[in-house]
Image (tube, rainbow over all chains, first blue to last red; front, side, top):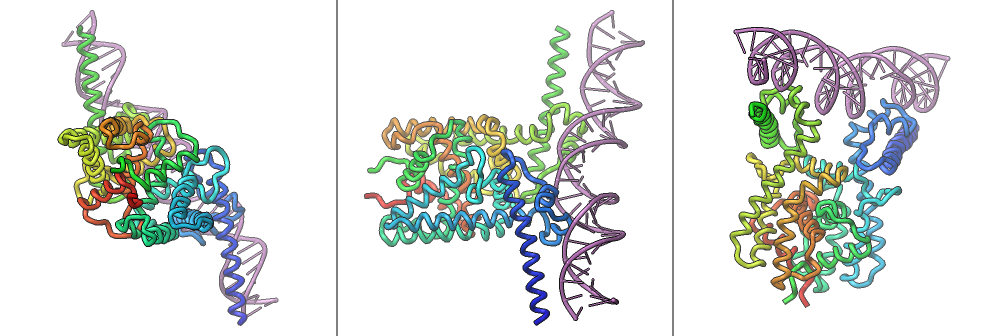
Length: 215
Length: 215
DNA sequence: GCGGGCACGATAACAGCATTCTCCAAATCT
DNA sequence: AGATTTGGAGAATGCTGTTATCGTGCCCGC
């Protein structure tokens, strides 16, 4: 019992420390100018702890970034779920998912990048995960994929989405379409980004009906 | 005239040197195991030149990567143009573009990554460009965007693509859709990648007709 | 030919960053 | 209280990109 108590308090303390590192990380991500990566030392300083502690609780910078990324995705999925729950029909829910996720993935205009609004640094880390750590990447994306997959299959059942497009793989594809279109579409084309609301609707037009004329 | 000749020979020599660095870079990209970035020293060694020369011809590693990326895109656009030219109708050309570009963006299965098959390293660099150097990124993508934009507007004129979808911005969006779906779709969803041919056709289905049932 | 300048190779120096190590004080447990 | 763990401060290490130094061979106009 004494043992149990001591373990508890130890765990509480650890969690507090881990959390402080994570918070410091998010703060740095939010405040950094575009593309600037933070250094471990900065995280340590800002969290008011020591290098030693950092490496006691994280195997390396990679682990910290992974944890931040995880939390960013989880938080995004939660917020999306709330939004989607507001809609009544499967089609409206799908529409809401697409447009809302699109907005979240748009690059933060000026200041406040939130957990739901991936900063350039997290986006770049995302890329590293996707290219070099498939397992970890897949695991991190689970909440989002699951939510979209559910939304999709409901729509399929309701007969408003072609049955070919049920399944996780399609969900993954649609996620990447939305995410990267929002993040990079205007940069790739070299055009000025348009207003978010109409861009989101165009995204939905594209996802839902494709580009060819209906025959 | 002697002056001219000497300048010529100097330029020829320079181009030779620059080219050797580029070649070495491509070789390293092609031979590196997944995700491994090369070091400047490796490029220097493999090209049989000196660090000094490297920094004489490139402002930094960034410039080398940019040049490699440029050439990769140019080469991809060229090959795509050849492919597309084989088809007769605007619709078939568009279809060809989508499926062929999709194949090119699929991660190289084992060995031979070519200039047209972006290696993980170039993909990651692409990401850095897109997030932190919009200007350079846009410029690099011009050949691809132009080709697709042309293909698209032909299709619009022929009445087989909705007129909303002419324009560079749409071309950029479609490119990112194809590219990132090919590269990351299966990783995000955590599913096994399917066979390239059918995956490419599915991509086309998605791009052309969207996901909702036709009404 | 010939001497001066210039491009180049080899290599050391420097700086930034992640990661590890050492030493020691303070907190916590028994 | 004594023993043991925890954590802080900072130096040390290693890798990499970048810059600087030095000496040499080659090409140039004369």
